[in-house]
Length: 407
Ligand SMILES: [Mg+2]
Image (tube, rainbow, N blue to C red; front, top):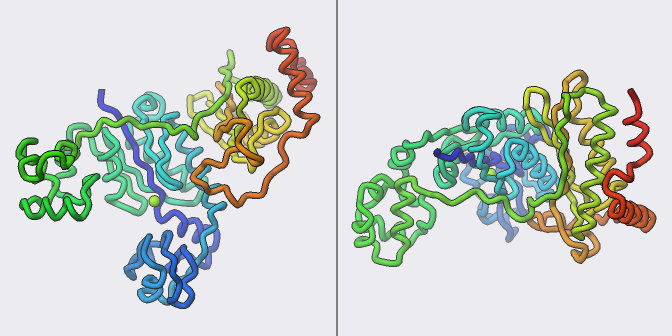
């Protein structure tokens, strides 16, 4: 069965976030990067809006050059904390469609939705839903490529930027790639490109038309010729790998009968948080990202997540956050089939005063938040002790008992 892989790439991410939050910047060339210092700045352009691209400005360009090309541009210093927060929201939307999300950078990810098609529809339909939610919930646009593998999906997402949606059906990979320039192939830098040009190979289709040995003859052995030839034919079987930072600990419950009773949801969420926190302490890990998952009666699944400044492992710290997230998901009168909670962005106890700060190093500047108080930890340890001796059901918080007692 062919796989369905999505490559989701936010459009001009940093600049788009700035234009969203500062309406006066909309429609203007916005250049996010270091201080141009009137053309004497020595830094580079991080991202720029599509309006700025028309002047020849692009990311990774020296900021002084951008200044020469577009002195009337609006030059903005990057706000990495804000972009990290928005990135977390984007990834939250993506992970509500599948657990198989491989985040490539702050604004880009691969998804393997092969197993989600039954629930959410074809690759095109899932891509359209993702784009719709990113636009509706975050006020931003993303371009999505849908294909049977990562390489072709990545090329496809780039083809109709911004706000693109390009689908390459299984079996059409080779035909899709054929007209593209050879430098679009992964691993083709200026040197290989020159060698290919010299051999008269300008398009991907020309490479694909050769046999493998023919290409090796032209490029020489050991030049990655086999890999190039496979990519040119649209062959790429690398899996989507959910990276280590996305590992999570959590629990979920499917109700015997779908429910819209908020008290029951509240009590269930608390029980799930207690179980999760208990397991985290047993494994000696703490997490910074809290995710709550809701599956409604028609199987539509939604998640919300929040990232804390410090890693936590107690119900006192996790539950208020989870409850807030659940309130955001709850819709009056809509019955819920399943509720779940998980902690990700995990680190061990030895990760330093602010817990793990792995996510792309974007959280370095965040102020530390107090960790669990000694009292909270003592209580948590007491609960762990009792549940170890008498089993999970022996202890539940007073609020939980109260809520579940109601008829
Ligand atoms: Mg991007």
